[in-house]
Length: 208
Image 1: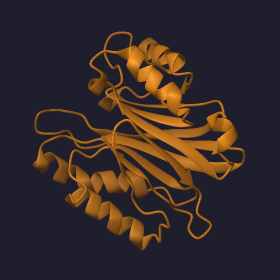
Image 2: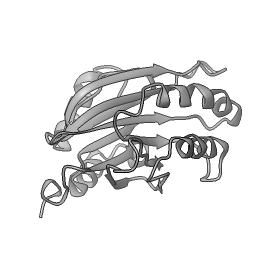
Image 3: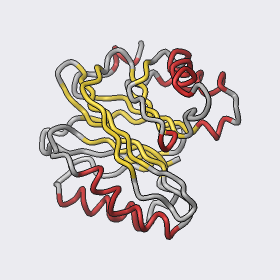
Image 4: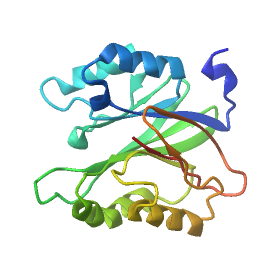
C-alpha cells in the first residue's frame, strides 16, 4: 500500500536528508527517499554552485518529487509530492558567521486535502558561538508567523538532544501549548505528523 493511501488528510509524511552523508551516491539517496514515500523532504547540502537550479530539479525528479523552494543561500531545499500542494514559501537569512558562512531558514506552506502545514528547514554550524548567535534569529524566523498551521521544523542543529537551542525550542513550543512537542530523528529521518486538535502548533525536529 502506497504512502498516499496510508496517510489521512490530517497527517503529513516528512523526511530530511543530508546530501553530504551519501558522498555523491545519488542513486542511494533517491532510493532512500522513494522507499519512504514522503509528502515533504527537506534537503541539506543541496546544489548551490554552477547550474544549481537544474541540478535541484533533477534531484527532485529522480526522487519522484517536485521542487518547492528555489532559494540558493544555505544549500537548503524543500521538495514535495503532488499530494502536498505548495501554497507559499519564504526565506529568512541568519546573521553572517565570523567566517562569512551564510545560514538561513527556508519554509513552505503546503496543503494536503484541505489541511495546511508549514515546514521549515535549517542547518546550523558546528561552532558553538555561531549557533548561540543564531539561536534568537532562528526562533524569530520560525515563530514570526502566527500558528495558523502546524509547524514542522526539520534539519540539523549540530548539537545533542540536550543542547541549548533544542531546549529553547522546547520552551517556546511549551508556551505555545504544542501537543506533539519535539521528536529527535536520525538522518535519513521520516516522521508522520498528525495535526493536533488541541493546538494549532505542532513540531517535529529532525536532526541529522
